[in-house]
Each structure stands twice: as C-alpha cells, then as structure tokens.
Image (cartoon, helix red, strand yellow):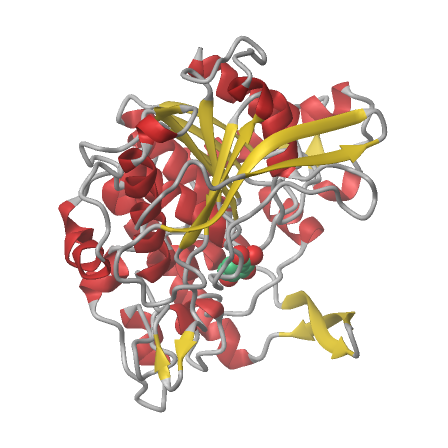
Length: 451
Ligand code: DHB
C-alpha cells in the first residue's frame, strides 16, 4: 500500500453559482493483500482552500473533521463514493461535505454477492472488516493528508447505517483481528470519533421478532415489486394478504420480543408479556414528538395516523396500520431464505444461510446456519460497552420507515445513552427508508461535536 501524496488531481464541480474545488486522490488500495482489488480502495478529497493555507467554517488543514461516508446499500458491495452534481443540479452528500469544510474519505467494501469466480468473497463480516481496514489506513497516512484523524465521522444509510454504527461501536475490538491480519491491514487503531446512522438495518438476529412486535396485528403486506425494464426499473405496488402459516409465525415471533427486550432493558425500559410497557411508551412519545414538530412547521397530521396532538396521544397499532407493514414474517431470517440478510450470512461456497434459531427451525429444507461468532461480528448491540466505542452518535429513523421496526434504532439509542454516550436520536416525520435528507442539521451536529 503506497500512498503518494504527489499523485493527485485538482478537480472542480460546479452548479449554479457554487463552485467546489478540491484535490482528489482516487482508488488508493487500503490493504496489502486485497481479495477484491477493485473494491478495497478508497478516495480522498481535500478542499483546495486547505492546500492554499485557508480556512472554511473555522477549520484548517489540521483541524478539519474527516467525513467518512459509505455507499453500502442492501448489504451489497460498494465502490468508494465521490463528490458530484446530480442530474437535477444539486450537489451530492460528498460535495456538500467538502463545501462545508470537511475532508471527505470514502472506502469501497465487499458485499453479499461479491465473488471471485465460483467463490464468494464478500459474505459477513467482509464489509465491516473492509471499513475498519480503511480507517486503519487513513490513520497510517495521517501525516500526508489534511484533516484530523481523531475526528473521523462515519455516515451511512440502511445497511450502510448499520455499518456506520458497527464501525463506530467496535473500534479496536480484537474480534476482527484475524480478518484484518489476513488482508494485510495496517496495525493502527480503527477507532472513530462519531457515527451518523440513517435507518440502520442492524441487530438482525432480533429484527424478526421486533418487526412482528410492531406489525404483528397487520395481515396485509404493502410492498413494491421491482422488475428490470430495459435500462430502467419498473416498480409496481403490491398488496398481499398473509396466509395462516405466516400469521402463526408472526404470533410466535411477536411473543419472543418482550423477553429479548427485557434481557437488554435499554436504559431501564421494559415490556410486559403482551408487548406493552415503558419501552413502547417511549417509542410512542418519539412519534408524537415527531408529529408535533412537523405540525409546528405547518404539516397536517391526518386523523388516520392515530395521533391526536391536542390530547398528546397515539394509537400505536393504528399508526403502524397507517404507515403499513412492508415485510412478511420472517422479515429477515426467512425460512425461504430470500432476504438480503440470508445472503449476507452465506460463506465462500454457500450463498445463503440462516442466522437465527427461529429461522433455522422454521425451514423445512434443512438449510445451514451461519456460525454464531460471525453473526455476532455484524451486530452493533454487541459492542456498545466496547472500550473503543465512539462517544458521539446521531441516529435518524424516518417515522414512515417500514424496513425495520422502530424498536431496533430505539434500543440502540437507549443502550448507548445508558453507557453515557452523546446520542442525538429522533424519528423525523413522514420520512421513509432513506438518508442524507437533512445535511444542514447533520453538519451542524458534526460541527457541534468537533469544535
Ligand atoms: C436495506 C433494506 C432492507 O430492507 C434490508 O432488509 C437490508 C438492507 C438497505 O436499503 O440497505
């Protein structure tokens, strides 16, 4: 791995009256023994102002935070992200971050379908190992680049949000060492300063029961069918009625959730056997707060949402029916193994595996189950008390997001808070499964923790 700081291009992107000039170092290998040389590379972007000795928003070439976005979605592989102007003329996240004065570094990572010939090379925990190796590499070249390597802030959405959370929590955990050593990763620290996580699809082992805790009363599934149509995708909304067998699975999963939740007891919050209690009250309050804040900005809160702002109440079951159920049980570890998560937990030769006892037991075809030590390495909840866990957390989970239960992000936020972390968490009103929709607020938060 050689990084030659002479080897850069000055680039410029422009839209309307705004022009962003930066140095770009592209496609730098971050491990010595890459198994996927096209993916195990990173890009570094440095605002030209810092090269010229100037400051942006009070930051200089030494103090600028390093914004570390990942492009992971659906647990698929990703190339490193780059600043650009979108078709509609807007700047993307990386461009906005540069304009705001951050050094931007983004790494490629392997994913659940990455293969070398017949061999799968991107199954769990490959994606998190790659991000960690990239952080180590960044530390190893700290004297050659601008920015403060002790202010690395990761950012990601969905599976990428989950990886952002895992990266931030598992800093310097020895459990990843065998994987990092095999790749020839640097031996520097892989701790980071802060995580921005949009709708993290994490805690996969408990996501099926969390999903049914939230949606188990709904037998109608509202989803979208994606079909390739030449160069584009045709998206059709589909309503499916769950069958008796699925509803039975749902009821069993739903019953499991309080037991798990109480074993974690995030910040003392609990549920009774029927799934009610302080943890549910907390989530209801998050949604009411979200609606209140939208209402104060002129938004109409429909009666069908089950929210009565004048009374300050919510009918949670009605609210979930209002946003609708998207996934059928088991939503993550499915007996039919069609989910992205089943594919994530395969191995070099087996494409798909189960990763929960429940999913394994519900499968009539005796499909294999991933080793628990691998499953463990993918779940942020296992690293909240890790010594190298980051101090600062910003978690956003749209109040209209149906890809995973609100319980998943709520548990994460409350467990972090219980450990004394600085957690900024809310469920923004009307926001579906997405990220980077509030960059101004995100950057304000980054500034507040970095200065
Ligand atoms: C993503 C979405 C999902 O619903 C899921 O199960 C896994 C990943 C995503 O958008 O990254």
